[in-house]
Length: 155
Image (cartoon, rainbow, N blue to C red; front, side, top):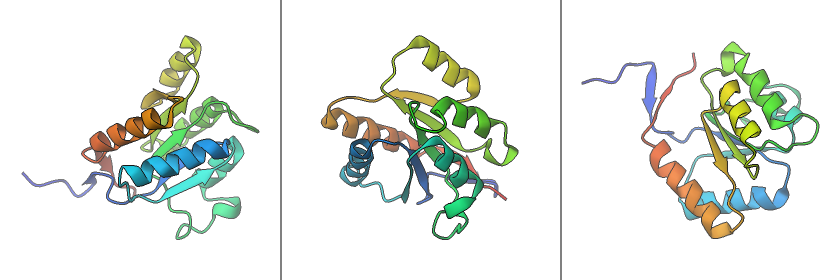
């Protein structure tokens, strides 16, 4: 069976955006990518405003060669300037962002946060492990599944 032209399988080297204000956790994600042999470009937004600007291709993110449109976003909830749930709510209201996969990556185990993220359209909600080995395991497990997903191609 042929794959329709408007679908691509796996992440195919497409950009992943990490929205995280904690530099130690950014380092942990970069390390987890290396350990799991994830070759996708990982772009970083350090707060909620930067995340929105990145997704819109505005401000310092206008150059889509340097800052490609992401197919997946890992989004922390506790961010400066604009919280992760606000970013998610905004993104899900934008037609050009509806197909982007949003994975919440938070240390919050509050049922209200988990329910609100699901209500706003998060694809998954991951609880950040505190140990780096478990964090690496989480990212490696996510990637082992995500590389077999089908993603719609933006036109």
